[in-house]
Amino acid sequence: QQQVKQSPQSLIVQKGGISIINCAYENTAFDYFPWYQQFPGKGPALLIAIRPDVSEKKEGRFTISFNKSAKQFSLHIMDSQPGDSATYFCAARGDYGNNRLAFGKGNQVVVIP
Amino acid sequence: DAGITQSPRHKVTETGTPVTLRCHQTENHRYMYWYRQDPGHGLRLIHYSYGVKDTDKGEVSDGYSVSRSKTEDFLLTLESATSSQTSVYFCATWDSSTDTQYFGPGTRLTVL
Image (cartoon, rainbow over all chains, first blue to last red; front, side):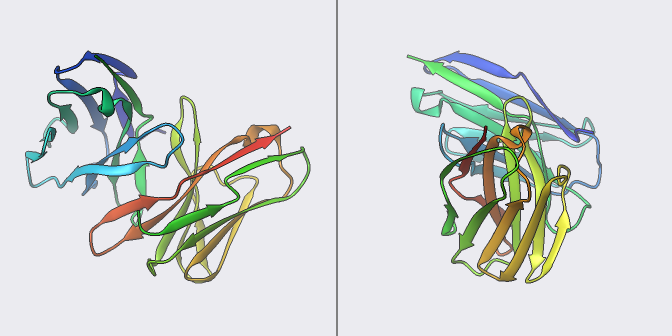
């Protein structure tokens, strides 16, 4: 069963706009929530991550908002640029041991000029 | 990117043939992982390793085996490749000092 659910599946945003991707999880034992960015033909790369004791984390134009009670977290891309066009994956580390991550299915973001 | 290399980067093979993919890392990370990526499925864990000779199954391990005889190398073997194993395969390592999973560049495997 999928433990991390990501929405929407794809997103088209105007340059300068805000891209928002949402993830929901079930396992309350998850203790670490990273977002990965993947460009075509490349491996995923860590973009930003948050722990459940923090409600928001910002790095440059990227912000994670975390709602522990709702078991949801989201990625906000401010002032979206064409170079942000990529696939974004949310993930969560749980109580499986060995730092295993459960990944969402991914969200393709297209930023049009 | 944690110095992860994967070989080969592309491979075309025929159904029924054995295939071995190699992952090599230079950062001395303890944990290593093999994922497959398919449209609509995201990243799915095949096998992982938590040390030399210590491996365990992930969520889609059927038809795959792994071996880790050295810290730096993690091999994924398809004993008898099937068309359903056509995919992009990613190796990853875990940096415990930063709680970051790093991915390699991927191997595109096509099974005809």
